[in-house]
Image (cartoon, rainbow, N blue to C red):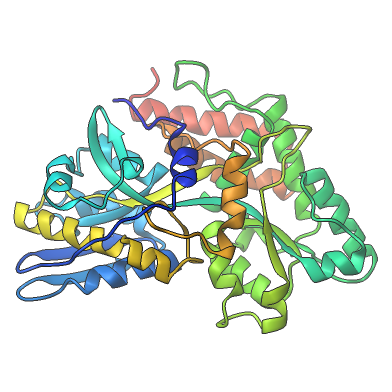
Length: 411
């Protein structure tokens, strides 16, 4: 199996801004959508639901647990869901088990508005339609930085210096935020920092792990240094918790998902004064590197294998309508949309800046999810101060090797 070319996302991001349209005409079929839950996906699934006309039905389950239930749900025959909204990483297990179908015939019949940059091609076939880009990038409070006499940090070393200055001047006790919740979120923070240090996860051409090295130690040590300026409960903070902290005015700096930018600055959470003071910039670099310590992501939709063709066709039409130019331009700050005709909003500046600095896509390898799982569990004790960085990385590799052998990736 060949996996997505790493140059896809930057090219797609830079290509936004040209025309397109979509239609929604459903006479029959059952559309059942499984998706993550954040504003951009709420907009897409909400628009798809408008296709419930005539005898067609459209339902959606938006849940942050989508990744954990998608394989079992699409393995059933018929599948519980007809369309799963996926990202770089969550598409891989569906491909591995053959649970999503090629989309080329549906694109030919109903995908006139789908641009080539949206097609996720695997072995010459389109297996998903990407509709938005995402990345973790710097959020900052310009009023706090100005009060401390600071410029916007561009490196993690500057982030630490800024945090120290803000604390020393009594502006905030815990000026930094992060999605350091043990598990998937914490692992993603390591992935970002390790790639920023120039690390590679696996030996060349192999599934053998290769993270117990100087870059791995440096990545962990920088993460631990950052936590000294975070709320002591930092291992419980996921995206929802960090967004609430920003909206409450409790955090001055954080590397946070671009898909949350619109929500953090809208009128529903933060006061107008706090919302107006939040700015966005590229993710910081680290250790003298020139590539931001972040990863580029896409979100898109798939169509299940184990469903009747009539439901597959209805689901494709509904999702194309949900991910249309009209939806993108009605929600310009909900995402950086990879849709022709979209005009980026102010909240897109951080993702765009991060992409333009050459940030790599998240590794789309069949065994990367096993590495991600091992990281999310095994580096916790290092951050709690009960083991060394070298021991934590050794534990990660041991845990990964056991899982990779069980899955047949290693002997």
